[in-house]
Amino acid sequence: MLDWLGSVQIRRRSASRVELGLTRGTAWTGWGLAAGGGWLISLGALWSMLLGGLVVGVGVLLGTLQRRLVFDREDGLLRSEQRIFGIRRRAAIPLFHLRAVVVSARRGGIYVAYVERRVGGTIHLDEARRPAPLLALAEAISEVAELRLVYDATTRAAVSD
Image 1: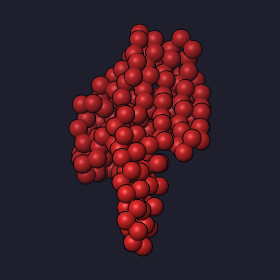
Image 2 (image 1 turned 90 degrees about the vertical axis):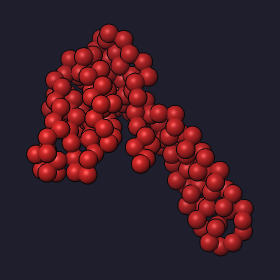
Image 3 (image 1 turned 30 degrees about the vertical axis):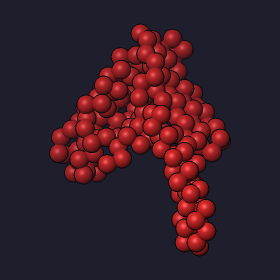
Image 4 (image 1 turned 180 degrees about the vertical axis):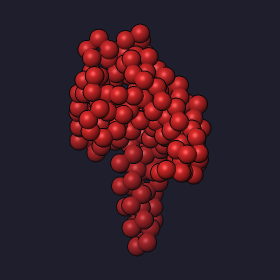
């Protein structure tokens, strides 16, 4: 139901660069939740103040959440930047450390897109109920970063989780 929350989309694309970022709907939802939580706090009842505080916290978390991934063939790097509550985390990963862009099926009809690394864990891109948007995202990354594209939507992949 809330597949779009926290989804990434292609912001800019050229022959040698793809820039991904979170959808604007995530931030708008977060600030809307924060406003709704403020309204609950203003009711004055103990239960509404506790629930309102929780909703404000989740709202601020979503409102300040930022994620940016830049696959740059000219520089030979994947630049990753994530912010949450204003705290920034950056990483630069050489493209030759990446093995493939994978779209695979999981249990419950969910499809997951991620970048497989030669050493270390995977880099999660996005997940959705339909594979088409994930496949378009993976194809764009695969073309720019010159990575292998793996599309595994078989039931075997979903059962092995």
